[in-house]
Each structure stands twice: as structure tokens, then as C-alpha cells.
Image (cartoon, rainbow, N blue to C red; front, side):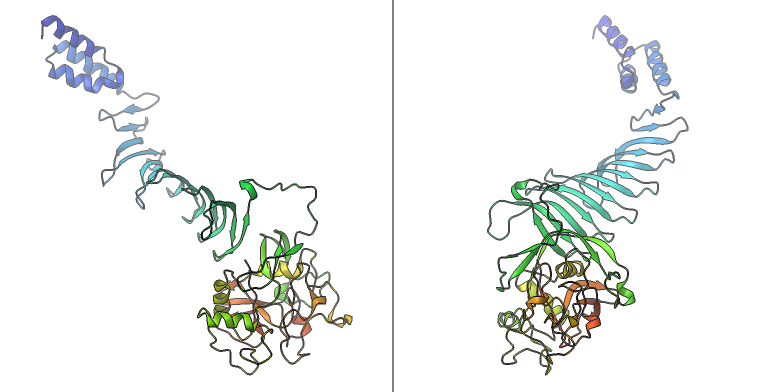
Length: 440
């Protein structure tokens, strides 16, 4: 290199941008520049590293500290060599992180709370699909926004992480083509209880002027796999519990009335019959175990159209699954029985002494009757035998593994054959007064 070229190079290094001064210092030394050039670049670098209002950058180029010396930005690699950027609070601990999640290795941006637990995660999957997760103080994911090959989904979860509602695009069922946009709602156990489709992938007009006052107005729909007629019930608010204005017979546990939201669903018009349950047993999907009590209808000549009784909660669940349905929740059962006007009985507020044949209660017939024998006792939804004949299992559980029975049975006292009455029994409990119906 000619002397004049060497001099120009050293002069150029003296004028290096501030962000390149660390490299410039190395180059002026290795290039054999004059002591004056080296001291000049060193002085500029020292000046750039002096404390300032914004903090200063260490010579390594990976850490930014504030005026008190606390690291506020750290650019480095974690133990497995993955690049990571952390933004720290005044305490020097991370409040934002850009890197790879230790749980799944996904590219992640995490924001933490004052306890330094992750509360918001923005992640990029291996396939490039993004997701957003909001986490509560108990480290449970409560809101998750994701997208996959089917489409986007927004998931709302309960306090234990179980899904309570999913809004999004769902894959087709069986061999159907295309996908379906809709809202999937689950109960507190995470069991799906309803799915409402959104026609044409467009949200419905929730402010229609022609909306009917009674959100429980129902229409009969196509039969299920078990040939059972079902009624469809619109979603909306429901008053659950005892309405003391019209009901003076309520037990103490019924008197905490409350209003809840119930999604749209379909429910069997009548209770599951002996004949229907027999088909499930023949298919090997249901068990006849425990159905041989003398008051049980199983294999009793002439009782094929009576409700199947003496079944446990597990047997009821097995049957509903076999026909592609499930047990209704407590709230669904009550809405199918009551509608929205807070009535005492499915047919209204008139008692059993009204002179009409309304329900099979009080051991009047010495046992069950064929399902649907009391059309005058129909509920606003058109469901029959919602009180009387047999108590009905629901999907709702309580502490201790007990499950709810609704509706009163053929041998129930009239006081216990009301809409708000609720029995509780263990899942393996079997009784001639207990049966079920399915929902979807």
C-alpha cells in the first residue's frame, strides 16, 4: 500500500460513524496507523461510552445499561444457542422477551407482569402460523387467538384452562366439503354443549327488528341417528332457579335464582325409550348391566315405548355418544322446560289440581307411562315429559362426583316435580325413577 493510500485509510477510520468505533479502533491498530490516529479513535470511542441521558452501550455491543448501571436491553444467546433479546425493568429483570419458548421452541414475544410471569405471548409456529395467548395470574391460558390451514379461531377458556367458547372456522364433518364458521360453546367441564353456525361465513344481524320476545321459541327439526324427534331452542338469557313470585314450594337450595346465557341447542322431544336403548345394546355400544330390577322397564313386554330407566350416568352418556349427541347441561334442560317467562311448570303456573292430565307424578300409574303421553304438559319448546315419568340425568357435576337429575319421576311428590327442583346422585347410582334424554 502506498503511503498516501495508507494515510487516507487511517484518516477514513478516524471519521468512522459512532456505531462503528469499536471496529474502527481494532482496524487502526491492525493497519499500523499512527499513534495519533489510534489515540484519536480511542478518545472518540471513550466519549461515546460515557454516561448520557439515554444510557450507554458497552464495547461488546450486546448490552444497554441505564444511568444507574442496570441492564435494560440484553442481546445474546440462551443455553442452547438460541438468539434472545430481553427488555428489562428498573429492577433489572425481564419484562419483555423475544426468542424461543422453552416449552415448545416456537419463536415468541413475551410480556410479563410484576411477578415476571408471562401474561401475553405472541408466537410463530413451525409452519409460520401466528398465535396470541393471554394468560391469567394463575398461569392459565384464558384467551387464545390462532390460525391454521382451516382458518382463524378465538378460544375463551375457564379458570382451569378448559375451553368454554371457540369462535372460528371449523373443519367439515365426516366427508363433507368446505369448512364451517361458527361458535362452539362448552360447559364448565370443557364438554361441548352447542355449536351455532354462521351462514355464509357472515355474522348474523343481532339487531333484527323482527326478533321474537321469547328466545326459547322452538321448532321441530330432523330426527337424529336414533330416529328421535328433537326440538331446536334459540340461544339467549335464562332465569335459573326458583321464581318465588309464582312458586312457594321451593327448597332452600333452589332459591338462589340467577340469569344465565345459554347458547342455541337441540334436545330430544321425549325421553330415550327402551326400544331405542335396546338398539344401542345390540350394537355393543351400551350395557344392560343393572337393568333387571322388577321396576325397571328393560326387557319387560309391552314397555318398549316407555323410558329406559334404572340407568347410571355413565350408561346415559354412552348412549348419547353412540347416537352422536350428549347429555344436556342443567341450564339447557331448564331452558327446554321453562322457556324465558320464569314459570313453575313446563305448561305454566297451574298446579296438578287444575283438572288436566299434565304429568305422571305421585305414583298415580304405579310406574312409568309411554313417553309423550301427556301433550297438555308440553313445555314452550314443545318438549314432553319434562317433569314426571323419570328424573333425567344432565351433564352437570358437583363436588364429590355427583351429577344432577332434573324433572321429578313417576313416584315424586308434586312438590318435587317442578322445573327448579334438582336431585343429585352419584354417577353409578341406578334407580327405577331415573332415565335421560339427549341433546346436541
